[in-house]
Image (cartoon, rainbow, N blue to C red; front, side):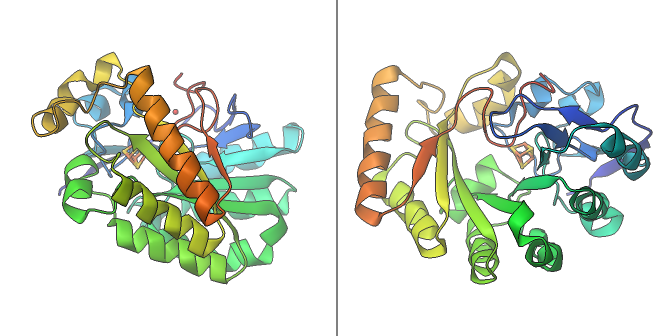
Length: 279
Ligand code: SF4
């Protein structure tokens, strides 16, 4: 897939976050080349072309580090989410290193960082995570273990097995890890086999499990048609269905001894910080 990259100068970079476990968010990119169909970051992104061609246009905030150095000096120390509205380890990061250099700056300055990604590129920065192991946690998102389904709903993201392996390597190296299962969509990825396999990854890696359900938003009507064409109930998240899925997750987590927590709006929700778009 051809991705168009556009370079911009941001006005600010260290935004306050209203996610319950984060104080700030650092998003060095806008738009995300992973192109997930369910991603509602597009609802809040101000670059119309990136919204209309979600996944194929990414803005690179070329002055991100300069701004971060300045802003990090001015604010009270706290926890920084990297990133909250795009994947910090999407492919451009391999070249730009804005996530890595931002992490180094934040950690050296006394901040704690919480990272969420779908990419094994995160392993490139294992040296930082082990050096500052008491100030870092890393979460991988696994929505489905079925490669074909993942290709449909997360067309350009790394395969689920690669994400599970990355989580395992991080954990083996003593990094605090967690796993985000979501968004759960009715009739798509809510079957027991899928959920159990993902919870087993959390168990094997000693990771806490966060989960959440799909929430329909206006901006998702068109992209989600590609999903509902095959899975007609994908966007129907009734309270009864949610309760059934929750019971299943509770049962499986309790059986496997995995700590779990539902993510709530304004808390950890996919890796989208509603407040900022609300990136
Ligand atoms: S859900 Fe995350 S990985 Fe997928 S397109 Fe949105 S920001 Fe990127």
